[in-house]
Length: 213
Image 1 (cartoon, rainbow, N blue to C red):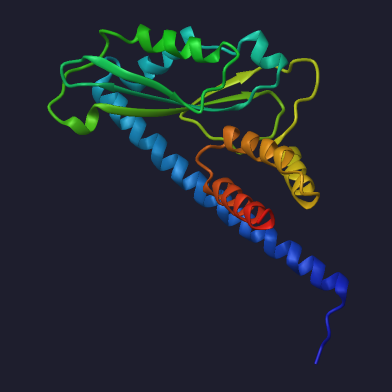
Image 2: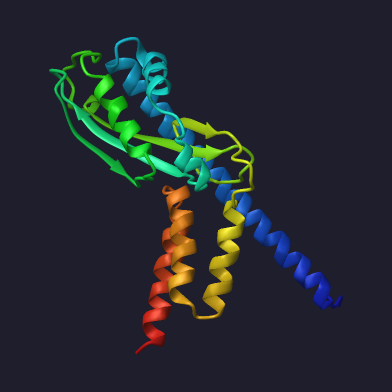
């Protein structure tokens, strides 16, 4: 019988973790691809000029603000709105708003689409939810969006996702709840469709509540 050394076991566990993470990334990519395909289908059907024209108007109205770049603001803002079959626009909301002037730009873009929608006869083409990834050149993040706005390098290095995950684990081990939650909330802001982060937060809060009893 072959006995594994401690070093071999560590390598095996590391490889198992890598495989699990790779599988999660693959699933997230598939979900993102499916989501983007549905959004494109909706826009091609409802927007005058299709998804290409929608994107053209978007990038004419939305860009990284200097404040957002200097503050290293990254994340996926989700535009939610309704355009009924008679082209009445309503219920504009931003899920996971990022601030620093970016919300106002997206509101301006939404207003710029008025009068540019096709009529319809099916309610399933009236509700839109469009994820928009704001990222900065050279920064590693797992966030995905239908539209991607990449800001130029601000002159200093912004933190990638791995940094905040490391901070979360470190603060969790030290029982520093606020700092751990701050790091985890940053990861959720950057990748709001990643259910793993929500599970981590749920488990963390559950464990913290049990410790304070």
